[in-house]
Length: 491
Image (cartoon, rainbow, N blue to C red):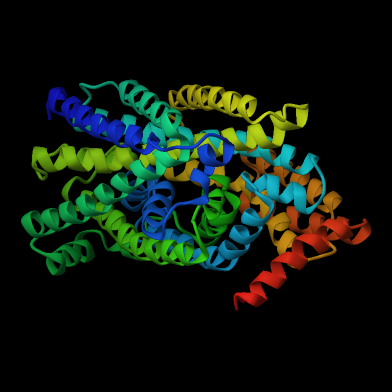
């Protein structure tokens, strides 16, 4: 595919997305709440599309397809575990929303700091999020770089795609904050799902003789990919290590959990969850089948993450469809990049900068916009290193964020949970996550994510038992929450 067509498709997409971003800016109010949470006014349908676009990033069509290409059907189980983890959203979502509205929380870490009556907790979690989420942001940039390079057969440099994605993400985040991101997310998620399904059916029925024949070819020529551990990758310990962080993704990753503050009502949140479930199931199946399609049509690729770009740039996909798919995958990546930048900016502003005595909303907002640019540039540098498989790097980023899980459960379900328990849980879990991953340590063969969750949970429970809980704040927080849950007939 010629570079001209790739650049033209990107130009049209960026032009239309920028139009939507500026349109979202009209009528936008001032203040941090409006900028970071769109004033808690997003309807259910838009919230569902935005949540889907934020969650399902370049990881899916590039990373998960590449995972399938190299590891087989275990990739489907891996992603379905994440989808099953949405039960946590159905359970925690109303609770996040109720306390967020009552106590005016902007950051999920701000919520935990208030619940435990301790300013060190959000500070530690904000630092942890920056350490672990910036590599995940870089994964999205890498996805766009691989895609544009692959579609043009290397004529467009990898870094050109990375730079384009960085500039666009910064611009859309700065124009109107969460409102801009929500509007562009809606466009992007629709492009993602419609185009991916259409191209899958085109490839299967045009080149593989329909789904029955497609599966017959897989069974005949690639039977080892249809069982676990497949080619040898997905044994039990590897599968557990990869999926455990993924199961808790919806509450441990702040760019996702912060979206639980955004819907305008609990009814809108229910619509968001239902919409995401349907979207997620379809997109998961499509991504895995894309990986299998590439395996059948283009076996022997040197780099598994190039499965989708190579397929889209091949003779099997018409140029116009390949370009539209490129836009869809780019849209998924930029949506996630924007969400990460906004969330990290909000936690830095609310959980670090504000605690230095800068209480002015205008000052915090100005600083937050600077943080967005800095985070994007760090992510760009990280992406330039082109580290590891996209899917593996995504999971590694989620491992460190598991340290917040015990504190989140304790905040809502254990009145005697303490600030000391939360602090030591975060510190010990973060140490395990970083040290085990960088040193390549896997005690008894289990991956760092397993040990991170075990250690942080045990420390949280033990220290909380031995220290004093903030009774006044816990009573206020849980008293209000339980009263509202009972009044609204929510379990």
